[in-house]
Image (cartoon, rainbow, N blue to C red; front, side, top):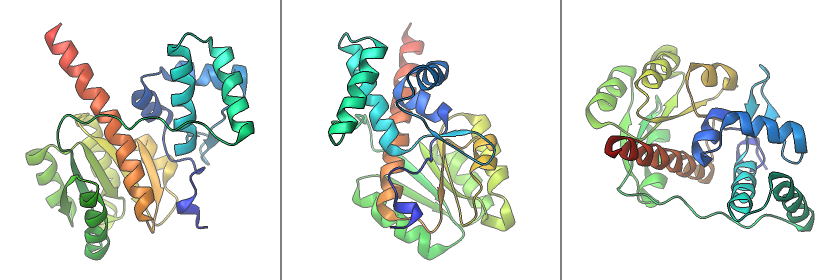
Length: 226
């Protein structure tokens, strides 16, 4: 199995997981140190990287705590579930509208392939084949998730990451044929995938990030009406 297809590969930053699950990053670090049941991998720059499996495991822990268990008991139950073969799947986040995914990709064929799979899942998709077009789409269409090829327009992907991250209006998924996880996370990406992209991996990652966006939209609505 390729590295890209491995469900245990770390791709999400601790900040992205904190937003995704509405659990403070400090709590995630404390759980890791105190219980040592769920330990994320580390990038070359020592940043925590959580896999999709670990996100589901954290969802399980959160559900146990919300049901009345202590954090210690929730981690003990998780350890038992893992020993017996897995963790119950968490529900997909509800979406209150059709999300727009912006694909910023220098390879037209790769962009169309990604578009096909995302549209099959019911998402609206826009494609930008250079940095200028990406900036226009971002400003005019306000995508909820942006998939950015870091090598687009001669390596302008990092600049786009920084600009889009400052706006704070979209979840950013960085992709590259070279291992740029550390640099992309520092620039503002919520997750990183190594190319070539495995379609199901891409779809599942976008789905997770859209769950984060849904939580962000809900928080903004609550703040606006409070």
